[in-house]
Length: 318
Image (cartoon, rainbow, N blue to C red; front, side, top):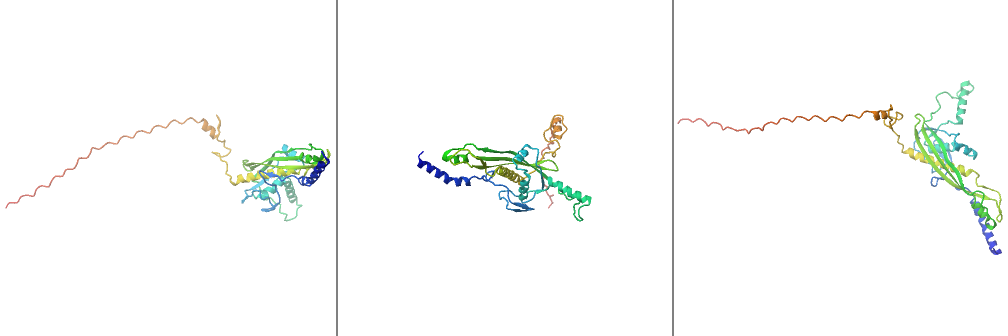
């Protein structure tokens, strides 16, 4: 390559460097098609800086407790990535939606019990009002699950050399973060599942390497470290919750003939449920044909009435 062409190529690469550096940020997570993440605050029924794409309910549907399975494989995977529990972001999202009132059943519940123990021991001040009958029942339980969360794309490889070394290094570290989540809503009194919803999200994470423009290997790291994966999981849960709210707006309870839990409509041979008894019941005998009604006797046709002329008047002599 001639010195003139080499100089032009280097000048072009240097001119593109600010654009490359500006682009080394993770893209905004896309919830479903093109939606954002959870943000802002909530206080009672009031919200502040809420994401406008989060679904809301005009009427609160009941109280809910969040149940996170810390023994599930996905949960330990999130801990390894230092992403922590999903509960805090779900709490904010649910309260902002106004669909449910959240009641505490997690770690803070132990503190609630401790305060009551202090009251019962006589250590609390007079008027502390931690008496019985004040804890609000949870009508429903909501369980989050992460079905899939992963990163695909280039890694740290693919370094170029020469004038295009920086361009190759940046292009080689473009990663796509994806996540799929579900939310399960269960009625606490009956144990019946009320709703289930799935959500997805993805974003792109662009990395930048501190490589020499003209040389090979150097060390570097991805933008936001692990933050893009955490944000895409949040967006997937927001998508799950949006889908659930849409379904609950048109909620219609599932019904079973005879009532839920009474045996169902799928009978088995020899069973004792109503459906099984119907299965084993003898076939009903065909109904007897109704007896023929006797024909009504026919009356003879009436004879036409004959009229006799009146007798002539008597003759008088003259």
